[in-house]
Amino acid sequence: MLTNNPPSHDTVSKETCTLAAIDIGTNSIHMVIVEVDKTLPAFTIISREKDTVRLGERDPKTGNLTKSAIARSLASLRRCKELAKSFGVEHIIAAATSATREAPNGLDFIWQVQEDIGITINLISGYEEARRIYLGVLSGLDFQEKPHVIIDIGGGSTEIILADAQEPRFLSSTKVGAVRLTNEFITSDPINETELTYLQAYVRGMLERPIDELRGKLQPGEIANAVGTSGTIETLVGIHAMQNLGELPSPLQGYEMSRQDLKDMVQQFISLTYEERINMSGMSEKRAEIIVAGAVILLEAMTMLGLESITICERALREGMIVDWMLNNGLIESRLSFQTEVRKRSVYKIARKYQVDLDYGKRVGGFAVSLFDQLWGTLHAWGKRERELLWSATVLHNCGVYISHSAHHKHSYYLIRHAELLGFTEMEIETIANIARYHRKSSPKKKHDAYSKLPDNYRKQIKHLSAILRIAVALDRRQIGAIKEFHCKYDEEYKKLHLHLIPSNDKDDCTLELWSLDCKKVVFEDLHGLKIVTTLESKIS
Image (cartoon, rainbow, N blue to C red; front, top):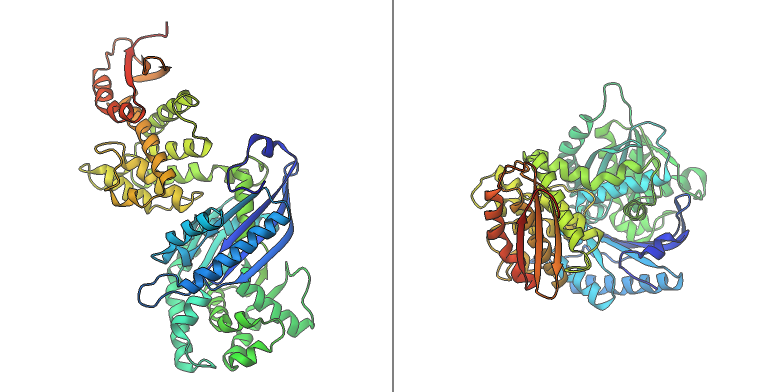
């Protein structure tokens, strides 16, 4: 059965499964279908699909994705789903990047895909896109204990990453893409000298900051290898191979091109018209439209980084999505095991950035997931994903105090929403931010703008999980760990939830915690139509 839902225990327990990953980019929609062998663990690519839809085609006045671009994308995604079905795919995972992120109607497009086609799209940030590109490269390239600079040039953005086999040391996403810059800078054919000068200067200016930051992450004397991924660089390397070898290597993986050869190619491109570029071996019609901008981006990046050559890796975002799925489902433990903690590490990183009391955050996080676990099957049926979102929101719920204690719950929403939380989709970050926002004061209401724009199932999650968070916060009102643990039991007949609290100190009457619980429990009680009855005791009788 084809589904976007999380895998069942039975599915995960099988030795193999078939998975499809769809990358919805600015220029193209790509799908890769793989068979995952959970015993190794590894995956084998059994089919690839690409459709140049130019989703990044936007209305110049509103910035919206155009109706024609959306129509092309919907048609492509329907074909993807049919192809996946023909291969017996059990799960489809899909991610949208810069074009959808930046367009005012990007979320409308996502909901339309969900409603019309039944594919759930995760909108991911530029940093998350970079992290998944790293995972994809890591799955197909032996880093040999050396640092690598990974360059991925897309239609709307360029990701530059510094990484080794253990972790990405630096992730960046910059709004310089082959489609974007072609639209913004190139009107002549062939490109004239003035436009070329502006284009080169703009690329250098945009890449200066991330490249300076990347250099700062290299150890003294370290020399990084360069890896290139995705369509623009694959095309450039393919043309280079045709010109120098007379054929296209299969696979292209591992093919190396020097910066000097790339510089010569750029000089060749800028002297040719579009029609002349089309006739080059290895060049498609669609790629010929944007190759000048793409080649300039790569040449400027390599020059600024001091890279003398670049090696192609045929795995990138789509394969990284597969690896991420395997990590999230506990299928990878070996050299990639470090990545399984990416969400937790990212939460802690943001907590430290905004000076959150981590001991307090972890303690309340423990209370929140304990209540979540004890109520599972009686008052809710949420799963592992929602549990993790609740924990993340709980650890970060007080981060808004960094700005001001007054209305700090609203500040928490803003800080979390715009934080670089790696491993989470945009919608998951939105959910975490909203859960944290509603840990105090008003309960979620449709008149609240950010909350009202969410789909019904996300609003329901936020209502339920933020109500649990309120109880957890109340249990540590003084932030000293006065409550050691608690146990709860739901009396369905009398609609009562009995909370048995065990204090850390038998002589502590926990007056403030009990008072806070009386204030905070109202939202939970109203939501579930019950009463909370609290008992403070030294042991469970």
